[in-house]
Length: 261
Image 1 (cartoon, rainbow, N blue to C red):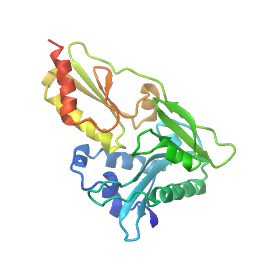
Image 2: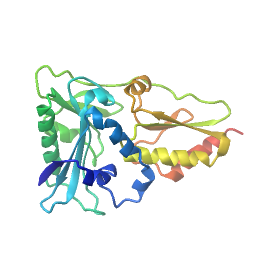
Image 3: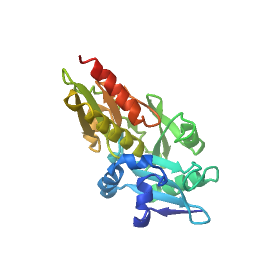
C-alpha cells in the first residue's frame, strides 16, 4: 500500500470522490472543483491511497481549521476520509487498513506543518465517517451538535478543543411564493447533487418558486447562519443522510405550491 499527495493526473477522480463510475456524480456540477480551487491557497491537503497494484482506493482531505466550518485555532480538520467500498467501478477496498494508512499519513503531515492537533467529525451512520472509528485511533469527543460529534486528537498539551458553529438562521421567506434556499460550499458531491436537483425542480414552477443560493465558503456566512450545506423549503430543512432524489425534492416543492392557492 502507498499513500501519495494528490496530483494533477488524479484531480478528476478526486472531484468525484473516486466514484467515476457513477452517473449520479454527473448531477453534482463543477462545484467541488471550484471549492478545491478556492481552498488551494488556504492550506487544503489531499492524499490518496493506492493498493499493491497501483489502484486508487481511498482518499483523505484536511485543512487548517481556521479555513473550515468549525471554530478553532492551530489545528487541522479532516473534512473527509473515504475508502471506496462499492462493488461497482474500482471495487471494494475496505477492511484492508487503507483508512488507517490515510489517517496516519495525514496526522504525520499535520504534525510536520506545526499543527497542535487533528480534529475530525464523526457520525452514527454505519458506512461513513463513524465517530467510533476515530475513537479507536485516539480521538475524543469535544463537542456535539444534532448528533454529529466533533473529535480531537491533540499533538501538544496546549491544543485547544474546537467547537461547532451553532448559531441558527431561518431563511428569509417571500409572501405569496414558495422559497427554496440551498446552502452550499461545494465541498461534498452529495450536497452538490441536492443543490442542482433543487434548482432544476424549482425552475419547473416558474415564478411561483424563488430559488436562493447561499455560498457558505465564506466562514462569516457560516458563523451568521450556522449552516454549511442544506436545503430548506419555506424555511423547513429537508433531507438528512443520502442525497434526496430529484423526484422527492420536486414532490416537496409541489406540495408547498399547492398551498399557495
